[in-house]
Amino acid sequence: MLRYLVEYVLSFFLLCIVCATGSAQNTRRQEEQKARLEREIAIIDRQLSDNASKSEAMLSNLTLIRKKISNRKELVSRSDRQIRMYNDSIYLTQIQINRLNERIELLSEHYSRLIASAYKNRDARIWYMYMLASDNLGQAFRRYGYFRNLSSHLNDEAQRIRVMQDDLSAEKERLGKLKKEAEVVKSERVRELEKLRKDEAEADGVVKKLSKNRKTYQNQLAAKKKQVLALNKEIERIVAEAVKGKGTSKPAAPVDLKLDAEFSKNKEKLPWPAEGPVVARFGRHYHPVYKNLELPPNNGVDIALARDTQVKAIFDGEVRQVMVMPGYNQCVLIQHGNYFSFYCRLKKVNVKAGDKIKTGEPVGYVDTINGHTLLHFEVWQGTKPQNPENWLR
Image 1 (cartoon, rainbow, N blue to C red):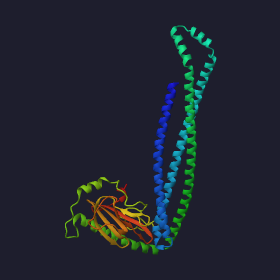
Image 2: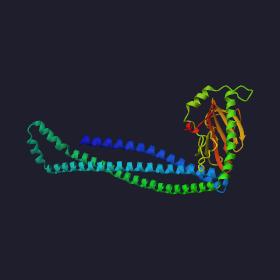
Image 3: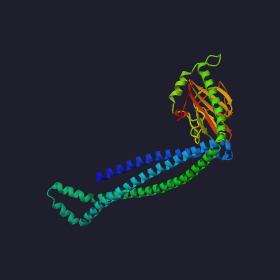
Image 4: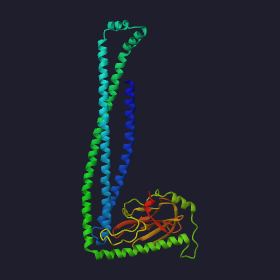
């Protein structure tokens, strides 16, 4: 019986520790993800509200709405995962409650037998006769020891039952709490699904408007394409000049090999220049409505931000150039050995060419252009553009 109780106590506390640690980590991670998604949705909602009456913002609005839909779906998936976690916890807790009930019943039955035995042997004369009837002296001493310790043994058994009953009450309370929390998450999921349906209806409305005015939006797209190509060409020129000395009589500055190696080692660990949803990804893409119409190539990513968000350097380096480009306002290029980071659509710049800069130091503040507050950000390795999302954590 004692071994059985020890095994129970050890297994019970081990289960509690494992469940508590895993649950705390999962809960914290889930809450962080939820907060990030909700912040991104708030940023997008603000930009959509600012551009509600601007027809030229239709394509950008559609991109923002679809990103919001993606976030909503992720929130719903997160709720689904959380509900599954709660269901698993509820199931395991119910199993533990069942086990506690079984063990309490077993201990109570054993305790009842001890009480009955003590009652039958309450007369001291019966004790003496029982000891005198022993086959040998050793058996007599053992029977004497049993009667002497019977009262203490009864108290110990009663205490074990009380401990288990307290554990049972705690588990029942935990079960009730889990069920309430699960209901809250289920209600949140229902609300997110309703918002998701509204967002999808809004996206369908924008698609219909874009479909009716193809020529207008094609002209806007052509103008945007010219701006993107001009930006890409200028960055390529500056990077080539920095790496090879191309296009200038001055020799290329020597590459800081130590900084280059450090930057390379931090792939997938670099901080984001600002916190916000990525609404335009790296590479070549097609129009979301006119499927055979290719959009301007994107050598970086576009990050939607709140107005006047501060933009920060992603790594130590030297400011190579500050320039102004049509449609992008001010842009800053920072060199990190043989790597470059590029920050565009800034309205206020805190640095100038030649400045040394550290990770996390301010580069400038994002600008709001035609109602949209977007940071255009690029990473280059030598003369080759990289997908920034492969470098940022």
